[in-house]
Amino acid sequence: MLLERYLDDLAAATMQEALGLEERPRALLRTTQDPKFGDYQINGAMALAKRLKKAPRDLAGPIAEAMAKHEAIAKADVAGPGFVNLTLDAGWLGRQLAAALGDARLGVDAVEAPEKIVVDFSSPNIAKQMHVGHLRSTIIGWSLVQLYRAVGHEVIGDNHLGDWGTQFGLLIVGMREFGDEGALEKDAIAELERVYKLASKKAKEDEAFAESARAELAKLQGGDPENTALWERFVATTRQTLEAIYARLGVRFDEWLGESAYDAMLPGVVETLLEKGIAREDQGAICVFFHDMDPGAIEGAVEGYALPKRLRKQKQPFIVRKKDGAFLYSTTDIATVLHRKEEMGADRSVYVVGAPQALHFEQLFAVMRLLGVEMGLEHVSFGSVLGEDGKPLKTRDGKTVKLKDLLDEAEQKTREIVEASRAEGKLRIAEEDLDEAVATIGIGAVKWADLMQNRATDYKYDPEKMCSFKGNAGPYVQYQYARVRSLFAEGGLEYEGFEAPIAPEHEAEVGLARVLIRFGDVVHRAAEGSLPNLICDHLYEVASAYSRFYTQCPVLKSEGETRETRLGLAALAGRQLEKGLELLGIEVLERM
Ligand code: ARG
Image (cartoon, rainbow, N blue to C red; front, side, top):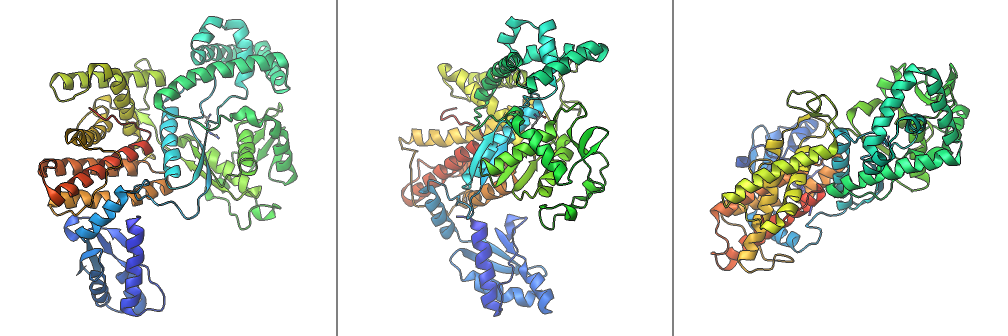
């Protein structure tokens, strides 16, 4: 069940009845800052008092009295100027948790209006190394795919590869001059990147070379078979390199519709923009200028659409065709939205892309509104990964960090920590399971470190902290899950499908129960705000509460109802840890 929604409705209905109001008031339910004061508080009496010109405490009194009568509530008291503090009834809590334990969705109800959502994530560029920004997009995007699905949406994960555009002219002439076939087969991205760098340098110094690159690009975009075949090879070899990384990260895509997929639509897009007066010619290029735009004057624009302030101040145009006739990133993105809406039937298109592209998406979304497109468009932005020096993460010699090296390093660090803990007898991972365990823990650590932060903020990359089995880190949470599994193994009990009545009594039992009951709300909030960090916060609380419970409450040695309650709580903690980690794209180990 979604506890908060349930309590909020309950509180509003109770307020209406207790105060004899005609309309249903807003309960303004919040979690309490300090568990000393209970689990939740109703703040609605204050707003209501203002409106009814009464003293808030006079309203709060009858509300508390009526709330206390409900079976879910153990205690309701008036506090401060007129809040009502609520403490949940432990027996009621236990019944809800037992029901969640027997529910395949673990009490995460589906949304009432499911949508079809395209999640555009990872989306690296051919001929360029995936950098940490792409790593963040891949990790966050994959988590969002799981989160949206978990609350009942239909989700299409799309890898919008940067596989079209000016770099291909340079790559074609560059491969001819500097290319190494063997290297291309071995590591396509590295070789293409090397060639691209040499070619773009030469193009700057040598006008004839630059001109031939432009000519090859024009040939490619005109469908020339020889250049098309070359391009196909670049894409195919790059894709192999990428697939290896995605396999390592456990990430899959439903579509790989790169920029090139929209090529045929581009002339039509520009034509429509010109016809509707959204774009105009400026020094030979076709541009959308926002600073002097009046959306009301554009036929077919979304009714009542107002341009964001930042765009109205923006003199920099959104260019959709260059002077030489080439189309751009912006043009393919417009075509992509149209395709997602019309061909895929999507209700929402979500872009998991770093903060530096904020203006691009603002401009893109504005153009779509001017074209009358009403689907949901959302830029799920994120900050940078920083090195120890607080500047964007670079290798020692100042180069961008390759994704593969970063993952290798995390696994290496994990291996050291795991081997040391095994030597001390703290971890029970068998020799033959070691490689797989190290990969699961190491990759999990990288993902957790990334997802635990609010995605908007930058964070410091700290392999030591990230791989730790203590404190807020992936391995710690995985470890608490494995502890649940070994409890069941030790007791000779079947963990899968385990059900039991739950009646928490001991303080540590109630403490764990109060955390577990929030799972459904947390998953919904994380999906609504595209905020996987809320899942991390919850799982860390579950892991900590479980650890406290486990130290204070013997499980296998207890008896009767107490034993059932404890096993039930442990099983539900295990399920939430496993499901929650799955929503983050992190795998678990049964034994650690
Ligand atoms: N290829 C782009 C980059 O690496 C990201 C693409 C994001 N998706 C999009 N539809 N614009 O910066």
